[in-house]
Length: 225
Length: 225
Image 1 (spheres, rainbow over the protein chains, first blue to last red):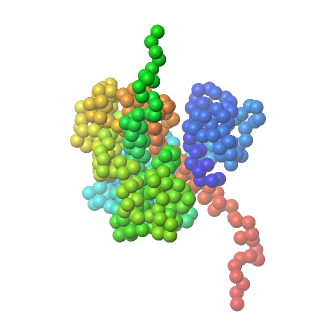
Image 2: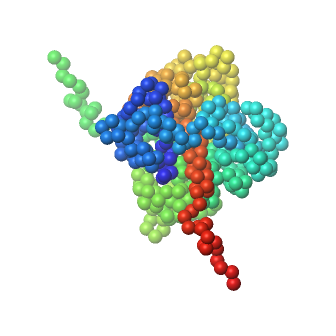
């Protein structure tokens, strides 16, 4: 399944969860695509990778499709996370109730700061990042979350890969290199804000530049009666 | 400029910042594209929207292009943020040093919980979300960050739009509706983990299923001397 299709599955799952909760039993690909914010052809192609093709003229069975997408994403199963970097963000992630409700259990916290190692956050004791390999193996960690400052991120990423972890979520505001076969997803919060700032600036520039012909004399609205 | 091109600008900026810091003066579109993880044609097209076309056989002037991309993203300018929802994540964002260094100043914190309103986080006093309109206007907020639980997110989003904010970053694990002209970007951390879990499961399934012909008798490696 293409990675871009995989990345849309959580969106479909959210849409299907909402529909099922509202008691909707069937939905066309056009309806689902509209709710998910993608094109209908794209949605049909993505779902065909899961072996689901809907029924012509009827569409998809909402509950059945939800269960299929959920199973593909491992809903109902348990994944052990290690969070490396127990600063403000790492702490917030460790305390997040939303992860556990979706099957993601924070099994390990690791930090390099002796003042932080040994403290307990969200019920989990912080281990020394020097013990990463041992901790990952002992607790069956399958996903590592890198929440360190930029300067430490590549070293942590290398250590995580050396420990055998193949799935990494990085919040570090820098590009990370991983060997082939390792899946790295990056969330850069400052980049998200920069993208919004671009749109805000473009909007301000449009507002400052009068639209051609719209404000000239003699075009100022409908003549009075 | 197409939104997808805008969304790649922070990646280009990061690459160009790194190159400039390393003293690299020129780079071809192929080199830049490789570092950014996109195709060279895509990169050239994205940059052409900024009026930058490079020089045939020479490529791009790294510092000049960095300054151009940075200016488009408002680097060096100041944007005022309001964070709505001062739970674990909102608190972590409010204390993030990385935002301020990129020009994003947390100007307002808002929450609905009377126990949280009036407390100070990262040097900013938390206001009552009921005062959102007044606070946004008084502090010139241009970007709102929604860090509330899912159940509150749509109401907060509506209130933020009613207050005149047109750029929104949401961390709520649910789809939000905004009127045309409002730019909404969503970061759903649990979805990121689900995508990684999918890849982990696919990897485990591949490992459990022997590759055709690779393990059969008589193909077990090179014959001895």
